[in-house]
Length: 136
Image 1: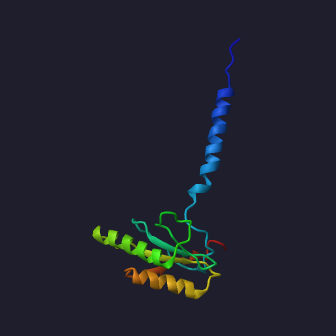
Image 2: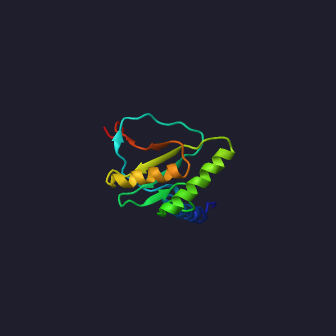
Image 3: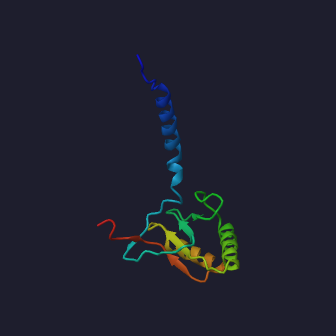
């Protein structure tokens, strides 16, 4: 009587299931921000942009920081962006810089983020919105 022992296969599948359950939440990057809606065109760039996120409480997050999900101070934000822009200039390419502001945040916090980016050396700063046609 020849039977296949499936217990080792079940063990492997359970281990893989646990691995995927742990790593799946880590794959989402950045901070969740409730973006305002507007009709826009998608950007197509080959280089990763520098994105400053401002959450509903007015805290700043930077996608190129050591830990993008941790809030950072204004001083560290400006220093880190200046360093990233200098690296991009040495490569001969201007990195795009954007601000993602939560719709509930005070407008002054978004403007302050734009001022910090300009002081860090960003030539132009764009605003990120959510396409209103997506939720129709």
